[in-house]
Structures are given as C-alpha cells and as structure tokens.
Image (cartoon, rainbow, N blue to C red; front, side, top):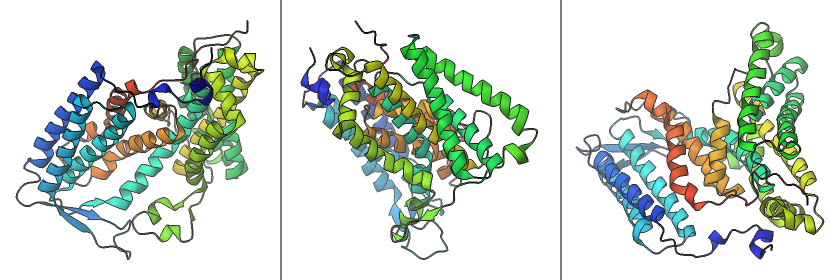
Length: 433
C-alpha cells in the first residue's frame, strides 16, 4: 500500500530519527582522526609557524579597484579550523543526532577542513589566495556537474538509472561543435547538442523499458558507444579538417548590470555566458517542477511505487519515456557547455569522467536538485584545486592534486552516501500486471 511519504516524495529519513548505527560511529571517528591529522599538519606544521601569514586577495584582477587584501595569522586560524573539524567528527560519532543534523555537520566539517588546508597552503607564500578566482573557477567547473546531476535526477526519480551521463556529454558536445562549425551559429549548435543528449537518452529509455536490459550495465555500454562513435568521427572529420568541422563560434559573456559590480563575487559570478546562468537557474526550476507541480507528483510516484501510480491512471512507462528523453536535453546541454561554452572545440573523451562525478553529486545530494547543486559545487572546487595551488609552491605533488576531484568524490560518497536513499523503484523495469 502506498504511504503518504511515497506520494509526497519525502523520505522517512528526513524525520528526526536518532541514528546510532555502526556507520555513524565509524564515520564520525574517521572524520575526527582526519581532523587531528589536519591539526598536526596544517596548524602545527612548519609552514604555518614563525608568524607566517596567509594573504586573501579579494579582487579578480589585482590591477583593478576593489577591497584590499586580508592578511590572517596562519597558525591560529588553521588550528581553529582544524579543531572545528575535529569537533564535528566527534559530535557525529557520539551525540544522539538526526540524519539531517549529520548532514549539516558534514558540511561544517568539510568547509572547516578545506579552509584549514588552504590557509596552510598559502601561508608565507607572499602570493596568497585569489578568492574571486577560486569562486569563479569553482562555479565554472560545477556547471557540467549540475546539468549532469539534474539529468540523472529526472531519470532516477522516474525509476530509470542513468549511468550514461558521460556518454550524453560526449555526444552532445560532438553534435554541438560539428553543427555550430558548419552553420556558424551557436544557437544551432545548442539545439543540436541538446538533441544529441536526448538521442542517447532515448536509447537508454528504449532498452531499459522495452527490452528490460539491466540499467547500470546498459549505461556503461552507452558510454562506451558514445566514446567510440565520437572518437571515430573525430578521427575521420575533425582531425583531418578542423577548420570546417571543429572551429565553432562560442557564447559570449554577458555582464549582469549591478550584480557584476558586487565586490569579490560580482565579476566572478555575474560576467559569464548564458549557458552558465541557465545551469544555475535550472536548479530552482527543476525543484519547483518536481516538488510543486502535478507532473512532479506523478514523476515521484512512478519512481517510488509504479504499481500504485498505475492503479490511479498514470501511464508509468510513457511517463518514464518522456522524462528520460527530457533528461537527455539537460545532459546534452552539459556537452554544449564543455564545447561552445568553455573550450570552443571538441576533443576525444573530453568529458573526462565528469559524467560519473555528476552521478556522485546526485547521490551525495540525496536525489534533490538543491543537494545536487551543493555537491556539484564541492566537486567543482576539488576539480580546480590544482589550478588554485599551482603557484603557491606547496610540497604536494602535482599528480596528487590532479587526483583531488576523484579522491574527494570517493571520500564524500563514503561519508554521506549511507545517509541517502534512492527512489524505491529506481532501476526496476515496470511490467504491468
């Protein structure tokens, strides 16, 4: 029998139920231990000693007018931040708190630990951290992760697992570049890229709903298919005649009057192209449609209890087809961003694992648009960490920093994945009767 929580889409884990399971204890202790390491390495390390200071630059362009840099004593600030991380881990491990409080503690833990690391990394460098640049690069890196997680969200809320986001990025990116190059129109490329992602999702919908193929395996196969097809066409067309097939126009930046003049964040966030703005505006739009409309109620019902949805007249399979193909438009838009919005050309396997990280953002965000946005920003920050630290002369090897987004993904999913519950019917084909 369908429960109220099923029809409303609200998980019972949102209730203030005390979690005393073993994973809560182990996870909290692990966080506290890592926080202790941060206290020793960042707060008490030689880099922050001897009255070293960390400089925070608050202008994107040092030559422009704006607020003056802030200099903070590295050692006490790093110690304080690492101590906050330790406290968050201990509270999670031993205090009787709800799952919601645990999630907020996790946010505080990651924020304090990362800030302690940045204070340590920039201590005594004389260069400092360019805060607007970090904000800008993080928000840019988060764009494809946001679009990919929203695409996977619509699919999984409808009961179909979309592991093929990576392939949809690739196919959308290729379709966008070759169309824009041949027509000299970014808008034609935008349409083609979105349709390319929708085509890949249409294959997912057909094989998952009609032929009942195991959906995780199907997604991996579609990723390989997209990689092979786009790689073959790249070799045949783009690598031999790049001027014709791989020289597209790109979207220009649009400065939003007033907002682009806000200190620190204005130039970083409000002087971007239209695809950037669209990605972030889609988050509240998808949230509203999913949780405040009749279509959203039906979608969540189909993803949680398709049999009950069928009994009240909802065409389960038809709705899944429509939603999965619509989701392909979003992941195709992610491919358009990678090319027309960012790189201005196509490269083989240029999605570079971003589709899989987007799925991790969906899991960490608990199958919610707002949660997925937060996770995408976190993973975007990890992606740009190498760029932010490259000029600071830290003893961390460059190769290790290049692994940062994947290490952070694994760590965050391990820490928060147990708090998330996917839609009950996700990945389960529906057979009427």
